[in-house]
Structure formats: C-alpha cells, structure tokens
Amino acid sequence: MKNAKNEKVNICVIGAGYVGLVSGTCFAEIGHRVVCVDNDPKKIKMLEKGVMPIYEDGLESMVKKNVKAGRLHFSSSIKEGMFHEGRRAEAVFIAVGTPPRDDGSAELSAIEKVSEEIANNITGYTVIVEKSTVPVETCDWISKTINRYNKNSVPFDVASNPEFLREGTAVGDFLNPDRVVAGVPTKEAEAVLKRIYKPMKGAKVLFTSVKSAELIKHASNSFLSTKISFINAVANVCEKTGANIEDVAKGMGLDRRIGPAFLKAGIGFGGFCFPKDLEAFYWLSKRKGYDFELLKTVKDINEGQKLWLVKKAEEELWNLAGKTVAMLGLAFKPETDDMRFAPSIDVVREFLKRGAKVRGYDPVSQENAKRVIKDIYFAKDAYDCVKGTDCVCLVTEWKEFSALDMKKVLKTVKHPIFIDGRNLYNPAKMRGLGFTYTSVGRQ
Ligand SMILES: NC(=O)c1ccc[n+]([C@@H]2O[C@H](COP(=O)([O-])OP(=O)(O)OC[C@H]3O[C@@H](n4cnc5c(N)ncnc54)[C@H](O)[C@@H]3O)[C@@H](O)[C@H]2O)c1
Image (cartoon, rainbow, N blue to C red; front, side):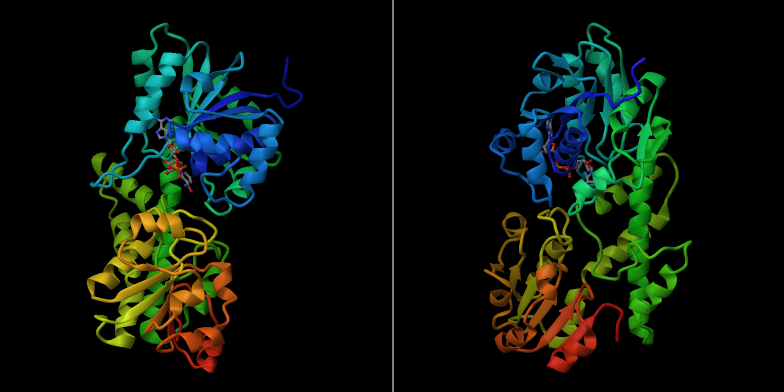
C-alpha cells in the first residue's frame, strides 16, 4: 500500500498560458514531475530561456527553481509531454483557451484537437483532467473524441478540475485555494487526483460528479459577475439619491450572508473570464431550454457601466470632439498584463467615436494594449499621459497611480478635471487640491 507519504505524479499540462503555466509550475513546486506543453513554439523557447511569456507576480522565480530541480520541463509536443524521459504521464491536464464565439457560446475546437492528440499518444491508464473553463458536457465530448481515436482501447478517465485562480495573484491562489473542485467519474480517477493535491496542505478538495464540477465554475463566475453588476447598479442609484456607495457597500458587506468581497463599484468587469463565462452560461442554459434572463441583465448593466467614464467626461466637457482625454491604466485590473476584454478597449472606442483624442498609459500592459487599441497616443509614464489634457480618467487602480504627485498632475493638465472610475482617491483631498473630481457612486 503506498499512500502514507506524498507520491510524485508524472503530469503533462497542455496549454502554457495564465492557467496552464501557473498550474504546471505549482504542481512542480509541490513535488510532482511536470511537462508543460504549448503549440506556440515562441512561448516554449522563451520558457526554456527562463523568460516569462506572461506577467504574474512570483512566477518567474518559481519556474526557475523547479526547472533547476528537474521537476519542470517544457515542450511543444504533446507526445513528448505524455512520455518524457522514459516516464509516462498519469494525468494530462487540458488548459488551452476557450474563447467566445460571436453568439456567446464557447469555442471548443482547441479542446477537441488536444483530445485527438492525447488519444493518439495514450499508452496506459491516464486521467485526462479538463482544467479550462468549459460548458457542462464538454468532458463527455472529450471522452467520445478520445474513444474515436484510441485505436488500442487504452483505458482512461476524463475528470473535471476547473481553475479558480485570479490573474495578478495566480500563484498564491493556486497554492492556497478556497477549495479545489474535482469532478470524477471513477474511484481510480479520484485516487490520482487525491495524490496530486495531497501535498497541498490545507486544500479542501470537493469531489463531485463531472457535470457538477463543470457547472460549479460557470455558476461561480456568473455569480461573481452578478455581484459586481449589482453594486454598480446600486452606485448609480447612489449618484441619483445622494447616498455614498462606499458606506452602502460596507454596510451590506458586514452582513455575513452577503460578505464584503466583490462589492467595489467601478467601471465594470472585463478580462478573459467573467464576460465570456457569463455569456457561455447564458447560452448553455438557453440551449438546454432555460432562459437565464438574470445573466442577460448582468451583462447589460456591465455594458452600460463601461461607458460611465465617457458619460461623466461629457457632463464635464460638453462636446468631446477636439478635446484630449488621459486614460490612466489600460489593463482590465491591476497586477496583470492581460488586455483581453479590458473595459478600456470599449472606453477608447467611445471616446474616439465622439471625436476626442486619447492619451493612454499602463505600467505593465502597454505592449499588449498596442495590439488591441489603435489610434491613441501611448504615453511614456503617467505624467506624460496627462500632459495638456482636458480631463484625466482613472481606468485601472494600479498602485503607482495612488502615489501620483497630484500637484505635478495639476501643473501638467490643461483643465483640472479628474474622473475616477475606480474610487481610488479621497474626494475631499482631490477637491482640496483644486480638482473638479468625480467618482463612482460618491458625491
Ligand atoms: N486567465 C484566467 O485568469 C483564468 C482563470 C481560470 C480559468 N481560466 C480558463 O482557463 C482556460 C485557459 O485560459 P488562459 O487565460 O490560461 O488562456 P491563455 O490563452 O493564456 O493560454 C492558453 C494556451 O493554450 C495554448 N494552446 C492552444 N491550443 C493548443 C494546442 N492545440 N496544443 C497546445 N497548446 C495549445 C495557447 O498557445 C496558449 O498558450 C480558459 O478556458 C479560461 O477561461 C482562465
């Protein structure tokens, strides 16, 4: 019987993005032998040289440490990932992207392709663990696909192990999770997942059916999005009534049934998870015959909230044509370089549509932003960004923006109009300095 001490598991992780690279590195950190596979050869080359393809606090040193210890490897071949240096992977995690299609449903062809390749290279009992965020029943499709190409009928199981890490705090989230959800079809699959997570001391692993695990992820992200849209809607009512959203959110959050998290009013949610998972959950429910209208409203509130900055700029500047606006921050949240579905993209588009000129700056995501945002001036730093502008908009609450020298900002801008989309600053202080200052849901 081998279960007293932690056992090393040979793991292959397919997809070395925000989820795959962090998961693979953390699995190595807790003692397993991991090969991270990606079909982007540039990414693999960078990783082999110790250069991180994404910005994530604490990741680089952990990657280097585990590569040095011989526990972490990189490859552009699934075949090599599943059989590396004479060792066969007992678990293969799928962590490829599942972007949204135009109708809101999830694009799953990368998952299908990977499943076919896994089937072509399977040589012994393997647990295929679906980690990407996918609609319920995807694991059934993975099983069917593997069965179709699994010429020698090698035994396998498909489990669901959705990932809940947040960009910006991904390494810490992965190693200290609130819970690990594992949807398993058999006792054998459960045993492999138990061995994988056993060294993660204190992690509560919730074993469920595969379908429940798949649904937990979509339901969780949709619930969090609902909380954000709810508080943003309340902030709008605060603006119209004279109440203060900070006090209202605090008062609500002190109720343990509600809790304080995700009650921060702002310019709406973005990123690669909430918008697409909300859409995919709505689409899936509808396809199954249930019109989950609440989710549609959550999305509509968010779309409206993204234009809050533009609306407030118009209230201050009247016509935006010919005016220049500074946008401080472009990433969808601080501590990430991710620009996927960042609200700033919509904000820029609306400012440009109204004839305004935009100067933008982000401390980390600037290079990624240049790929998705065109026709704006990308500033060298925050002070260059605000230079000569008619109004300054705070888009992302990076730490460096809380430490801005506001007296210097005042000297640099054309008009002292400051619109704070994240309630980062103290209204009394900003007004005391001489700004015409507007924030979300606060008088
Ligand atoms: N980013 C997050 O914060 C987060 C959190 C939880 C869950 N998720 C989910 O995890 C999944 C991955 O998200 P991500 O942010 O890591 O995406 P990503 O785009 O950063 O990474 C996906 C990686 O998969 C690789 N890939 C695509 N097709 C491949 C193939 N056929 N073979 C090998 N590699 C392939 C890509 O090159 C890319 O590096 C998504 O379903 C996402 O919704 C993301």
